[in-house]
Length: 509
Ligand code: FAD
Ligand code: NAI
Image 1 (cartoon, helix red, strand yellow):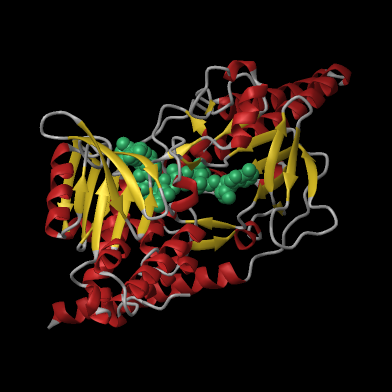
Image 2: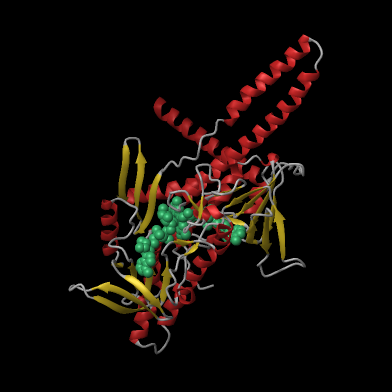
């Protein structure tokens, strides 16, 4: 009985602690403290983008040290790892968005935010040209912002490799609008397929969901879509049951090339069980509004071009460089050999410049273009900038003290100043000790449908490759803990419960 009483007390206390912790966070996020105004004598630090790299930098940056200006066409941070779940309504898109204004309002010194796209960085004149491309424009939709320091964190575009018809006909999966378009289109295909008098061939086409690209984006989306069909669509629209079909097309011999071999096999086996068709060694060459043309080799080794009709086409073949980044690269001679983005050194300084840094998918630092890399790079830059500000502060104090020392009269006064100088020099050495950026890989995770996930995790002794339902719970808890805010976490949990209890919403907005 004593043991039970103690267990009960401990549970009770932890529950109270949990509620208090949650309430504190909610209160803090709702009522931020007053902010100081930026000091115009400080350097202007312009940050482009509100994605993983830039937001991770802003999170840790001490904004009292700079005049910080953030420019991005997206006035929110998007938690991309859960974006595939928004295409089917497992999660509502607003649950993984965090308004940038709320976040910036919590910084100790105010930060300026402009909702605009940086159209050009004029490297020579240290100016960023920006344009408000939103629906409502004021009297000056275009202007420029001067900078002393610039961080480019604008991410990347969808790669199409110039394949005809992709931009016009395919859906991508990078932004909230893409997920919304896919969700709408899935329902449109299902409703149109059940329209009176539709030919059987057209029904088959409309219900053929084709995903191009077997990287993690394509695999996660295919898994989510098949779940949507199995758990909800076939129940509410039984007419589509025999024709709804998901196909994943991949040019390489296997999907998820960055995962361990056993996890690739596990994923392919799981897809087979889920009846998702995988077409590996198949390269899409052309896209029209109703079919794709895909090339593969037949049993005799001859190249065959096959027309594959589709109702929904999702294109997930990786990243390419944004035009604005290409333009910046062309202005810097040291970037002439760069192809996939801005080449940076070990401190993330854009090679060939002194005052421009790049983070995330637009920077080439020999790491994969992932959120994990971008957020570590952003956090590193915040530390670097905080240290730089401290260094400058100490150096200017040292300048004043050495003047004081030369004018001080009497040995005692000179010794006192000398002591202060020594202390400051010691601090300066400590502050200056910041090593280059080192990426620490925590592992890779991907959802593969049927409440299963795969994980390649860096473990104490090496690598742990695991897949299945337990990994799926790990996947959920890992991403939940990584969500931007307590608000996001609560919304995501609520969405998961809603989808489980009531099923996903099949209405077309
Ligand atoms: P982004 O996060 O893309 O942010 C770029 C920012 O720049 C945006 O705010 C954009 O609006 C802004 N911008 C664009 N153009 C301009 C301009 N001209 N001027 C100013 N601002 C501009 N990685 C993982 O590690 N784990 C995962 O599970 C994972 N899942 C993913 C799922 C999906 C569906 C996708 C698409 C990606 C996923 N990734 C994942 C990859 C990860 O999202 C990217 O690597 C990461 O977003 C890169 O961060 P970033 O800051 O470079 O760019
Ligand atoms: P990716 O670059 O990882 O994969 C794209 C795939 O498309 C490649 O396997 C390529 O062979 C294939 N492909 C290219 N052209 C093709 C064509 N014409 N026909 C058929 N196949 C073609 O791209 P993805 O999945 O968009 O990911 C981008 C980045 O984001 C990656 O670095 C990835 O690691 C990261 N990411 C990570 C996730 C995770 O960790 N869970 C989830 C989603 C993205």
